[in-house]
Amino acid sequence: MKLPNAGMARVEEAKVCGYLLNSAHRFGASKARFFAEFGFTLDNWEVLAIALKAHGTENQVIGVTETGFGPRYEVDGPLAAPDGRQPWVRSVWQIDRGEILPRLITAYPTEAKS
Image 1 (cartoon, rainbow, N blue to C red):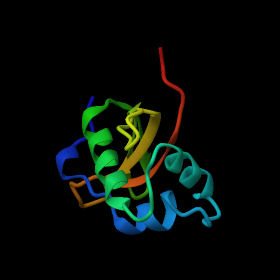
Image 2: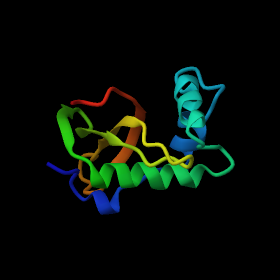
Image 3: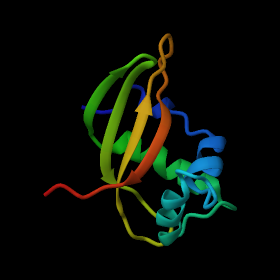
């Protein structure tokens, strides 16, 4: 199954800059180091936003969890990186109650499934 309405998914600047690429963030610092290894930078945060949106569109949903805020979708697959590599990443998306557009919750490295 694919992420519902993936073509309209939102990847907010605050999520990318304030969390995923923020090396000083309490929980995001390890993610920032990971993404930096593959050429993603805070100065060009849009590159990661575009790559994550493509990741959510192109890869399969591997799990859905119902939360009090709406369904949360986990998507696993390769992420196109600026340095040409494709690390295996899990992106997590949520469709808030009353909404139809998925929004990025988080993304982090994961193991490729054989």
